[in-house]
Length: 187
Length: 187
DNA sequence: CCGACTTACTTAGAAGGCTAAGGATATTTG
DNA sequence: CAAATATCCTTAGCCTTCTAAGTAAGTCGG
Image (tube, rainbow over all chains, first blue to last red):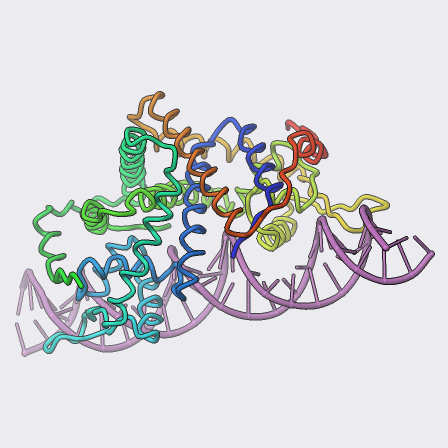
Protein backbone atom coordinates (compact mmCIF):
# COMPACT_ATOMS: atom_id res chain seq x y z
CA UNK A 1 0.00 0.00 0.00
CA UNK A 2 1.22 3.47 -0.69
CA UNK A 3 2.75 5.06 2.33
CA UNK A 4 4.02 8.57 2.14
CA UNK A 5 5.72 9.97 5.18
CA UNK A 6 4.32 12.90 7.05
CA UNK A 7 7.38 14.81 6.01
CA UNK A 8 6.54 14.29 2.39
CA UNK A 9 3.01 15.43 3.03
CA UNK A 10 4.17 18.58 4.72
CA UNK A 11 6.58 19.32 1.90
CA UNK A 12 3.84 18.88 -0.60
CA UNK A 13 1.52 21.10 1.36
CA UNK A 14 4.21 23.70 1.62
CA UNK A 15 4.90 23.56 -2.07
CA UNK A 16 1.24 23.72 -2.91
CA UNK A 17 0.90 27.06 -1.20
CA UNK A 18 3.71 28.59 -3.18
CA UNK A 19 2.51 28.01 -6.71
CA UNK A 20 0.28 30.75 -7.97
CA UNK A 21 -1.07 29.48 -11.24
CA UNK A 22 -2.72 26.23 -11.95
CA UNK A 23 -3.18 25.18 -8.37
CA UNK A 24 -6.77 24.21 -8.95
CA UNK A 25 -5.88 21.56 -11.52
CA UNK A 26 -3.33 20.10 -9.19
CA UNK A 27 -5.62 20.14 -6.23
CA UNK A 28 -8.14 18.20 -8.24
CA UNK A 29 -5.50 15.75 -9.34
CA UNK A 30 -4.27 15.29 -5.79
CA UNK A 31 -7.76 14.81 -4.48
CA UNK A 32 -8.43 12.26 -7.18
CA UNK A 33 -5.30 10.33 -6.36
CA UNK A 34 -6.06 10.49 -2.67
CA UNK A 35 -9.51 9.09 -3.21
CA UNK A 36 -8.10 6.43 -5.49
CA UNK A 37 -5.49 5.34 -3.01
CA UNK A 38 -7.95 5.24 -0.14
CA UNK A 39 -10.32 3.03 -2.08
CA UNK A 40 -7.56 0.90 -3.53
CA UNK A 41 -6.22 0.15 -0.07
CA UNK A 42 -9.59 -1.14 0.99
CA UNK A 43 -10.36 -3.04 -2.18
CA UNK A 44 -7.02 -4.78 -2.03
CA UNK A 45 -8.00 -6.37 1.28
CA UNK A 46 -10.77 -8.10 -0.62
CA UNK A 47 -8.55 -9.05 -3.51
CA UNK A 48 -10.18 -6.67 -5.94
CA UNK A 49 -8.12 -4.28 -8.02
CA UNK A 50 -9.04 -0.68 -8.49
CA UNK A 51 -9.29 -1.14 -12.22
CA UNK A 52 -11.96 -3.77 -11.85
CA UNK A 53 -13.99 -1.70 -9.44
CA UNK A 54 -14.68 0.81 -12.19
CA UNK A 55 -16.45 -1.80 -14.25
CA UNK A 56 -18.09 -3.74 -11.46
CA UNK A 57 -19.84 -0.59 -10.25
CA UNK A 58 -21.46 -0.22 -13.61
CA UNK A 59 -22.38 -3.85 -14.00
CA UNK A 60 -24.02 -4.03 -10.58
CA UNK A 61 -26.33 -1.34 -11.76
CA UNK A 62 -27.50 -3.47 -14.65
CA UNK A 63 -25.39 -5.94 -16.58
CA UNK A 64 -25.69 -7.51 -20.00
CA UNK A 65 -24.66 -4.54 -22.09
CA UNK A 66 -22.25 -4.78 -24.99
CA UNK A 67 -18.60 -4.30 -24.29
CA UNK A 68 -18.58 -1.06 -26.19
CA UNK A 69 -21.44 0.38 -24.15
CA UNK A 70 -19.54 -0.56 -21.02
CA UNK A 71 -16.56 1.41 -22.28
CA UNK A 72 -18.72 4.43 -22.88
CA UNK A 73 -20.22 4.31 -19.42
CA UNK A 74 -16.86 3.88 -17.78
CA UNK A 75 -15.46 6.70 -19.87
CA UNK A 76 -12.48 4.71 -21.01
CA UNK A 77 -11.25 3.51 -24.39
CA UNK A 78 -12.12 0.10 -25.72
CA UNK A 79 -8.78 -1.62 -25.13
CA UNK A 80 -9.00 -0.69 -21.47
CA UNK A 81 -12.36 -2.33 -21.17
CA UNK A 82 -11.20 -5.28 -23.18
CA UNK A 83 -8.31 -6.15 -20.93
CA UNK A 84 -10.23 -5.49 -17.73
CA UNK A 85 -13.13 -7.66 -18.86
CA UNK A 86 -10.78 -10.40 -19.94
CA UNK A 87 -9.10 -10.34 -16.56
CA UNK A 88 -12.41 -10.34 -14.71
CA UNK A 89 -13.57 -13.22 -16.84
CA UNK A 90 -10.54 -15.17 -15.75
CA UNK A 91 -11.30 -14.31 -12.14
CA UNK A 92 -14.83 -15.57 -12.61
CA UNK A 93 -16.53 -12.24 -12.03
CA UNK A 94 -18.10 -11.89 -15.47
CA UNK A 95 -19.04 -13.88 -18.53
CA UNK A 96 -18.80 -12.75 -22.12
CA UNK A 97 -21.75 -13.96 -24.16
CA UNK A 98 -22.84 -13.59 -27.76
CA UNK A 99 -26.38 -13.46 -29.01
CA UNK A 100 -27.35 -15.83 -31.82
CA UNK A 101 -27.42 -13.93 -35.08
CA UNK A 102 -24.90 -11.38 -33.89
CA UNK A 103 -21.32 -12.43 -34.09
CA UNK A 104 -20.07 -8.92 -33.61
CA UNK A 105 -21.08 -7.70 -30.20
CA UNK A 106 -20.04 -9.29 -26.94
CA UNK A 107 -22.36 -8.86 -23.98
CA UNK A 108 -21.00 -8.71 -20.48
CA UNK A 109 -22.85 -10.52 -17.72
CA UNK A 110 -22.03 -10.78 -14.05
CA UNK A 111 -21.59 -14.23 -12.56
CA UNK A 112 -23.06 -14.96 -9.13
CA UNK A 113 -19.58 -14.37 -7.76
CA UNK A 114 -19.38 -11.02 -9.48
CA UNK A 115 -22.75 -10.11 -8.05
CA UNK A 116 -21.82 -11.16 -4.58
CA UNK A 117 -18.96 -8.69 -4.44
CA UNK A 118 -21.36 -5.79 -4.43
CA UNK A 119 -22.37 -6.11 -0.80
CA UNK A 120 -18.78 -6.29 0.33
CA UNK A 121 -17.34 -3.58 -1.86
CA UNK A 122 -19.93 -0.83 -2.01
CA UNK A 123 -19.63 -0.05 1.69
CA UNK A 124 -15.92 0.49 1.20
CA UNK A 125 -16.56 3.22 -1.32
CA UNK A 126 -19.11 4.77 0.97
CA UNK A 127 -16.62 4.73 3.78
CA UNK A 128 -14.00 6.47 1.68
CA UNK A 129 -16.51 9.05 0.64
CA UNK A 130 -17.52 9.68 4.22
CA UNK A 131 -13.92 10.10 5.29
CA UNK A 132 -13.14 12.44 2.43
CA UNK A 133 -16.00 14.85 3.06
CA UNK A 134 -15.66 14.85 6.82
CA UNK A 135 -16.11 18.30 8.19
CA UNK A 136 -17.62 19.65 4.99
CA UNK A 137 -21.15 20.91 5.00
CA UNK A 138 -23.73 19.47 2.68
CA UNK A 139 -24.03 22.87 1.07
CA UNK A 140 -20.32 22.91 0.25
CA UNK A 141 -20.44 19.46 -1.26
CA UNK A 142 -23.35 20.37 -3.47
CA UNK A 143 -21.56 23.49 -4.59
CA UNK A 144 -18.44 21.53 -5.38
CA UNK A 145 -20.38 18.97 -7.34
CA UNK A 146 -21.99 21.70 -9.39
CA UNK A 147 -18.67 23.37 -10.05
CA UNK A 148 -17.04 20.09 -11.05
CA UNK A 149 -19.83 19.30 -13.47
CA UNK A 150 -19.47 22.72 -15.04
CA UNK A 151 -15.73 22.17 -15.42
CA UNK A 152 -16.22 18.76 -16.95
CA UNK A 153 -18.64 20.19 -19.46
CA UNK A 154 -16.34 23.08 -20.29
CA UNK A 155 -13.46 20.72 -20.91
CA UNK A 156 -15.52 18.28 -22.93
CA UNK A 157 -16.63 21.11 -25.17
CA UNK A 158 -13.07 22.24 -25.63
CA UNK A 159 -11.97 18.73 -26.40
CA UNK A 160 -14.73 18.11 -28.89
CA UNK A 161 -13.88 21.33 -30.64
CA UNK A 162 -10.15 20.64 -30.70
CA UNK A 163 -10.82 17.27 -32.30
CA UNK A 164 -12.84 18.96 -35.04
CA UNK A 165 -15.60 16.83 -33.70
CA UNK A 166 -18.54 18.29 -35.53
CA UNK A 167 -20.59 15.15 -35.52
CA UNK A 168 -24.21 15.60 -34.69
CA UNK A 169 -25.14 15.27 -31.04
CA UNK A 170 -27.40 12.30 -30.40
CA UNK A 171 -30.66 12.80 -28.59
CA UNK A 172 -31.28 11.52 -25.12
CA UNK A 173 -33.85 9.09 -26.52
CA UNK A 174 -31.27 7.38 -28.69
CA UNK A 175 -28.90 7.06 -25.82
CA UNK A 176 -31.61 5.71 -23.57
CA UNK A 177 -32.38 3.10 -26.21
CA UNK A 178 -28.78 2.10 -26.40
CA UNK A 179 -28.57 1.74 -22.68
CA UNK A 180 -31.79 -0.18 -22.27
CA UNK A 181 -30.13 -3.40 -23.35
CA UNK A 182 -28.86 -3.55 -19.80
CA UNK A 183 -31.33 -5.29 -17.51
CA UNK A 184 -31.72 -3.79 -14.10
CA UNK A 185 -30.46 -6.79 -12.20
CA UNK A 186 -30.65 -5.76 -8.63
CA UNK A 187 -29.02 -8.73 -6.87
CA UNK B 1 -5.01 12.84 -28.99
CA UNK B 2 -7.89 11.37 -27.12
CA UNK B 3 -11.11 11.82 -28.97
CA UNK B 4 -14.32 10.62 -27.47
CA UNK B 5 -17.46 10.96 -29.52
CA UNK B 6 -20.30 13.11 -28.42
CA UNK B 7 -22.36 9.98 -28.10
CA UNK B 8 -19.95 8.59 -25.58
CA UNK B 9 -20.05 11.82 -23.65
CA UNK B 10 -23.81 11.81 -23.53
CA UNK B 11 -23.86 8.21 -22.38
CA UNK B 12 -21.42 9.01 -19.65
CA UNK B 13 -23.42 11.99 -18.57
CA UNK B 14 -26.57 9.92 -18.54
CA UNK B 15 -24.90 7.23 -16.49
CA UNK B 16 -23.43 9.74 -14.12
CA UNK B 17 -26.87 10.94 -13.15
CA UNK B 18 -28.05 7.48 -12.27
CA UNK B 19 -25.45 6.45 -9.72
CA UNK B 20 -26.37 7.45 -6.23
CA UNK B 21 -23.30 6.69 -4.19
CA UNK B 22 -19.81 7.77 -4.80
CA UNK B 23 -20.60 10.28 -7.49
CA UNK B 24 -18.34 12.87 -6.01
CA UNK B 25 -15.26 10.71 -6.30
CA UNK B 26 -16.04 10.00 -9.90
CA UNK B 27 -16.73 13.60 -10.72
CA UNK B 28 -13.36 14.50 -9.31
CA UNK B 29 -11.71 11.75 -11.29
CA UNK B 30 -13.44 12.82 -14.48
CA UNK B 31 -12.54 16.44 -13.93
CA UNK B 32 -8.96 15.46 -13.31
CA UNK B 33 -8.79 13.41 -16.46
CA UNK B 34 -10.43 16.17 -18.45
CA UNK B 35 -7.90 18.69 -17.23
CA UNK B 36 -5.12 16.25 -17.93
CA UNK B 37 -6.25 15.59 -21.46
CA UNK B 38 -6.72 19.26 -22.22
CA UNK B 39 -3.22 20.09 -21.06
CA UNK B 40 -1.69 17.02 -22.66
CA UNK B 41 -3.14 17.97 -26.03
CA UNK B 42 -1.49 21.35 -25.84
CA UNK B 43 1.83 20.15 -24.46
CA UNK B 44 2.11 17.56 -27.17
CA UNK B 45 2.16 20.29 -29.79
CA UNK B 46 5.37 21.46 -28.19
CA UNK B 47 6.81 17.98 -27.89
CA UNK B 48 6.51 17.87 -24.13
CA UNK B 49 4.86 14.96 -22.38
CA UNK B 50 2.42 15.36 -19.58
CA UNK B 51 4.64 13.37 -17.28
CA UNK B 52 7.48 15.83 -17.70
CA UNK B 53 5.29 18.85 -17.11
CA UNK B 54 4.77 17.77 -13.53
CA UNK B 55 8.46 18.07 -12.77
CA UNK B 56 9.26 21.05 -14.96
CA UNK B 57 6.66 23.14 -13.12
CA UNK B 58 8.47 22.52 -9.88
CA UNK B 59 11.94 23.08 -11.25
CA UNK B 60 11.00 26.40 -12.84
CA UNK B 61 10.10 27.56 -9.40
CA UNK B 62 13.58 26.87 -8.13
CA UNK B 63 15.85 24.04 -9.28
CA UNK B 64 18.82 22.33 -7.75
CA UNK B 65 17.04 20.24 -5.15
CA UNK B 66 17.82 16.59 -4.54
CA UNK B 67 15.92 14.02 -6.52
CA UNK B 68 14.15 12.86 -3.43
CA UNK B 69 12.91 16.34 -2.57
CA UNK B 70 11.62 16.64 -6.10
CA UNK B 71 9.63 13.45 -5.59
CA UNK B 72 8.14 14.81 -2.43
CA UNK B 73 7.09 18.05 -4.05
CA UNK B 74 5.59 16.28 -7.02
CA UNK B 75 3.80 13.89 -4.73
CA UNK B 76 5.01 10.81 -6.57
CA UNK B 77 7.18 7.88 -5.60
CA UNK B 78 10.89 7.86 -6.21
CA UNK B 79 10.97 5.50 -9.18
CA UNK B 80 8.52 7.76 -10.99
CA UNK B 81 10.81 10.72 -10.51
CA UNK B 82 13.83 8.66 -11.40
CA UNK B 83 12.56 7.62 -14.80
CA UNK B 84 11.13 11.03 -15.61
CA UNK B 85 14.36 12.76 -14.69
CA UNK B 86 16.38 10.26 -16.68
CA UNK B 87 14.18 10.88 -19.69
CA UNK B 88 14.39 14.64 -19.32
CA UNK B 89 18.13 14.39 -18.98
CA UNK B 90 18.26 12.58 -22.29
CA UNK B 91 16.09 15.29 -23.81
CA UNK B 92 18.49 17.90 -22.50
CA UNK B 93 16.01 19.58 -20.17
CA UNK B 94 17.85 18.84 -16.94
CA UNK B 95 21.25 17.86 -15.57
CA UNK B 96 21.92 15.59 -12.63
CA UNK B 97 24.82 16.80 -10.53
CA UNK B 98 26.54 15.60 -7.38
CA UNK B 99 28.14 17.78 -4.77
CA UNK B 100 31.71 16.99 -3.75
CA UNK B 101 31.67 15.18 -0.45
CA UNK B 102 28.22 13.73 -1.02
CA UNK B 103 28.07 10.71 -3.21
CA UNK B 104 24.55 9.90 -2.19
CA UNK B 105 22.27 12.65 -3.28
CA UNK B 106 21.72 13.74 -6.86
CA UNK B 107 20.72 17.32 -7.47
CA UNK B 108 18.54 18.25 -10.37
CA UNK B 109 19.31 21.38 -12.35
CA UNK B 110 17.54 22.84 -15.34
CA UNK B 111 19.53 23.41 -18.50
CA UNK B 112 18.97 26.60 -20.49
CA UNK B 113 16.72 24.55 -22.75
CA UNK B 114 14.73 23.36 -19.78
CA UNK B 115 14.40 26.90 -18.58
CA UNK B 116 13.32 28.18 -21.95
CA UNK B 117 10.31 25.90 -22.01
CA UNK B 118 8.70 27.83 -19.21
CA UNK B 119 7.57 30.76 -21.31
CA UNK B 120 6.03 28.51 -23.90
CA UNK B 121 4.36 26.02 -21.59
CA UNK B 122 3.02 27.98 -18.66
CA UNK B 123 0.54 29.89 -20.82
CA UNK B 124 -0.87 26.58 -21.99
CA UNK B 125 -1.70 25.59 -18.44
CA UNK B 126 -3.23 28.97 -17.82
CA UNK B 127 -5.35 28.58 -20.92
CA UNK B 128 -6.62 25.21 -19.80
CA UNK B 129 -7.41 26.59 -16.41
CA UNK B 130 -9.31 29.49 -17.91
CA UNK B 131 -11.33 27.18 -20.13
CA UNK B 132 -12.12 24.86 -17.26
CA UNK B 133 -13.47 27.51 -14.92
CA UNK B 134 -15.37 29.42 -17.56
CA UNK B 135 -18.69 30.54 -16.23
CA UNK B 136 -17.76 29.91 -12.63
CA UNK B 137 -17.64 32.76 -10.21
CA UNK B 138 -14.50 33.55 -8.27
CA UNK B 139 -16.42 32.79 -5.10
CA UNK B 140 -17.27 29.30 -6.32
CA UNK B 141 -13.69 28.57 -7.27
CA UNK B 142 -12.44 29.65 -3.89
CA UNK B 143 -15.02 27.49 -2.20
CA UNK B 144 -14.06 24.52 -4.31
CA UNK B 145 -10.40 25.00 -3.57
CA UNK B 146 -11.13 25.08 0.12
CA UNK B 147 -13.25 21.97 -0.07
CA UNK B 148 -10.63 20.11 -2.08
CA UNK B 149 -7.91 20.99 0.37
CA UNK B 150 -10.07 19.74 3.21
CA UNK B 151 -10.66 16.48 1.36
CA UNK B 152 -6.99 16.03 0.62
CA UNK B 153 -6.15 16.55 4.26
CA UNK B 154 -8.85 14.16 5.39
CA UNK B 155 -7.57 11.49 3.06
CA UNK B 156 -3.94 12.04 3.97
CA UNK B 157 -4.81 11.61 7.61
CA UNK B 158 -6.68 8.42 6.87
CA UNK B 159 -3.80 7.13 4.83
CA UNK B 160 -1.20 7.95 7.43
CA UNK B 161 -3.28 6.22 10.03
CA UNK B 162 -3.90 3.15 7.91
CA UNK B 163 -0.18 2.82 7.34
CA UNK B 164 0.39 2.87 11.08
CA UNK B 165 2.38 5.93 10.29
CA UNK B 166 2.96 7.26 13.77
CA UNK B 167 6.21 8.98 13.02
CA UNK B 168 6.61 12.40 14.51
CA UNK B 169 5.40 15.27 12.39
CA UNK B 170 8.24 17.55 11.31
CA UNK B 171 8.01 21.24 11.97
CA UNK B 172 7.57 23.78 9.25
CA UNK B 173 11.06 25.09 9.98
CA UNK B 174 12.64 21.77 9.16
CA UNK B 175 10.74 21.51 5.95
CA UNK B 176 11.64 25.05 4.99
CA UNK B 177 15.28 24.18 5.58
CA UNK B 178 15.02 21.17 3.39
CA UNK B 179 13.41 23.16 0.62
CA UNK B 180 15.83 26.05 0.80
CA UNK B 181 18.46 24.10 -1.12
CA UNK B 182 16.47 25.09 -4.19
CA UNK B 183 17.61 28.42 -5.54
CA UNK B 184 14.88 30.72 -6.74
CA UNK B 185 16.00 30.80 -10.33
CA UNK B 186 13.54 33.03 -12.01
CA UNK B 187 14.52 32.76 -15.69
C1' DC C 1 -26.66 -8.33 -54.73
C1' DC C 2 -22.16 -5.88 -54.12
C1' DG C 3 -18.81 -2.78 -52.85
C1' DA C 4 -17.99 1.00 -49.52
C1' DC C 5 -18.56 2.45 -45.13
C1' DT C 6 -19.18 1.87 -40.32
C1' DT C 7 -19.04 -0.55 -36.08
C1' DA C 8 -17.17 -3.79 -32.56
C1' DC C 9 -13.77 -6.31 -30.89
C1' DT C 10 -8.82 -7.42 -30.70
C1' DT C 11 -3.69 -6.91 -30.74
C1' DA C 12 0.59 -4.44 -29.97
C1' DG C 13 3.15 -1.27 -27.79
C1' DA C 14 4.04 2.87 -24.97
C1' DA C 15 3.39 6.27 -20.98
C1' DG C 16 2.92 7.08 -16.31
C1' DG C 17 2.36 5.53 -11.99
C1' DC C 18 3.11 2.09 -8.21
C1' DT C 19 5.31 -1.67 -5.03
C1' DA C 20 9.10 -4.49 -3.75
C1' DA C 21 13.60 -5.12 -3.28
C1' DG C 22 18.66 -4.08 -3.77
C1' DG C 23 23.06 -1.51 -3.35
C1' DA C 24 25.59 2.32 -1.75
C1' DT C 25 26.34 5.86 1.37
C1' DA C 26 25.48 8.66 5.66
C1' DT C 27 24.31 8.83 10.34
C1' DT C 28 23.54 7.28 14.87
C1' DT C 29 24.46 4.60 18.70
C1' DG C 30 26.59 1.21 21.77
C1' DC D 1 35.53 3.03 16.33
C1' DA D 2 32.27 -0.40 14.66
C1' DA D 3 27.86 -2.07 14.07
C1' DA D 4 23.16 -1.05 13.35
C1' DT D 5 20.06 1.97 11.21
C1' DA D 6 18.37 5.24 8.02
C1' DT D 7 18.38 7.48 3.64
C1' DC D 8 18.87 7.96 -1.28
C1' DC D 9 19.14 6.25 -5.69
C1' DT D 10 18.36 2.41 -8.79
C1' DT D 11 16.37 -1.85 -10.87
C1' DA D 12 12.66 -4.88 -11.95
C1' DG D 13 8.17 -5.73 -12.82
C1' DC D 14 3.14 -4.90 -12.47
C1' DC D 15 -1.28 -2.15 -13.25
C1' DT D 16 -4.15 1.06 -15.66
C1' DT D 17 -4.74 3.63 -19.37
C1' DC D 18 -3.87 5.32 -23.87
C1' DT D 19 -2.93 5.41 -29.22
C1' DA D 20 -2.45 3.09 -33.51
C1' DA D 21 -3.55 -0.32 -36.32
C1' DG D 22 -5.80 -4.72 -37.66
C1' DT D 23 -9.75 -7.96 -38.35
C1' DA D 24 -14.30 -9.41 -38.63
C1' DA D 25 -19.09 -8.41 -39.12
C1' DG D 26 -23.12 -5.67 -40.06
C1' DT D 27 -25.34 -1.84 -43.07
C1' DC D 28 -26.52 0.80 -46.93
C1' DG D 29 -26.65 3.09 -51.54
C1' DG D 30 -26.60 1.95 -56.17
